[in-house]
Image (cartoon, rainbow, N blue to C red; front, side, top):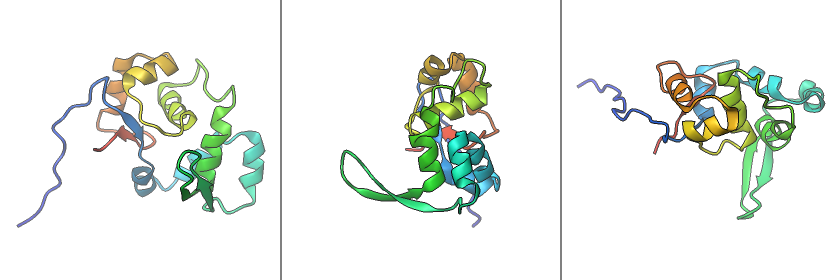
Length: 144
């Protein structure tokens, strides 16, 4: 018996939470580190220029004090560079604006409606873009 992968029959709505699925992105795009590097601020681009971009660091959750090993580049991007005032502007393209919104909020799930409020793009346009057959920068509905 051949097992086939089943797709979800549930169609996302403007209330469906999305996030950057870094695991999916790593598996499907060999250039994902190049994309992340390009989002670093000038200070951190210089810092990471001559270092191992696959470096892992220990990160301590400020609420639980639990220690996690995380990707150094991802952590630096989300904890510093994405918080700079010019990281997300009104002129940023749709895919980039949504991607940057997730980086800015630490990749916590957001609905198209919430993303609309952050980016100024319409929730329906965000939904249509990220619920179609093409997956942009690993942005996918949260799997329960």
